[in-house]
Image 1 (tube, helix red, strand yellow):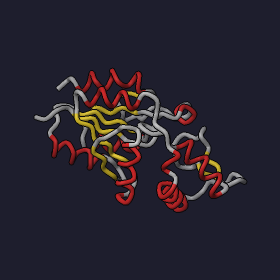
Image 2: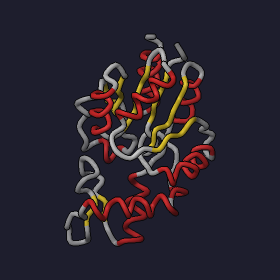
Image 3: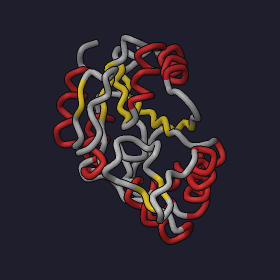
Length: 203
């Protein structure tokens, strides 16, 4: 049995994303992102209030990751928390972007002194989480993500994993209910750290 394992999302958990994407998409596409909208779907709108259809959203996200990742800043407390967790557990960052951005994401995180294995993924995270568990055989696993759909996916494929719902952007967090398939909702690393360490120590 290996060390315990933390599997963490990146955007809006380790790095702030939504506020920077909202700023850029207004500049580049004259669209607004409603930070008071629960969830990503329906939050992107034209100036007259029309919701941007999903088929337009992914290309805009790709454009952001193509040239605007430098805008992103680290979530307060994340660096110190990951450093402490790394003393007790392995850490894998499972980020919901395409493989084309893997090298850029690694470099982006290293700029903040965050150096861990980075895996890219599109779609539900349950299967890649299960594959990591089968590969590493950790004593205990904690999964952290901002999107409820991924907690549901992990609950389906790897139900023994502890699941923490975290949204680091306060304006988004205030309008987003806790993910029903997560064990807990904590939106700051200072409060999340003891919760995570306690569960990693249960092996």
